[in-house]
Length: 131
Image 1 (spheres, helix red, strand yellow):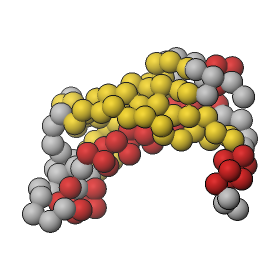
Image 2 (cartoon, helix red, strand yellow):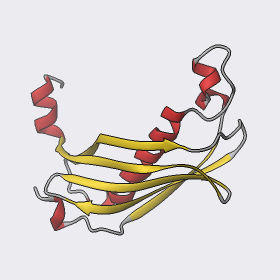
Image 3 (cartoon, one colour):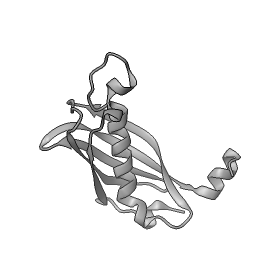
Image 4 (spheres, helix red, strand yellow):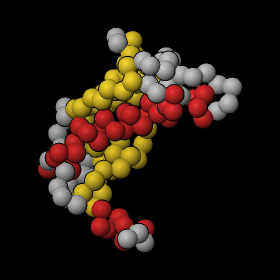
């Protein structure tokens, strides 16, 4: 399957999140501030990327994250409303590339690039020995 047949640059999505204590660095690392953790921001960026193309995938196909190049620019406290965005910027045969950003209001919290690989679930599970 060739992603260029059904994914196009410009496809996009966004997600909104009110930062809970469980998504802060202080939740994972003692004595650290209770601010939105970088890995959680990246997760939300990846989820927005998947949302941008999910409805265009054929049954039995998914995408998995393969690359991240993210800068965390500013902190957000528990209770902050964070908006993550993803926009397709390039499509290869099995790789979709995104520009991703995170905001609290107009303030940019993070930015970068993310890539997702096109995967056939059945073949993937067989290769891993999963059921």
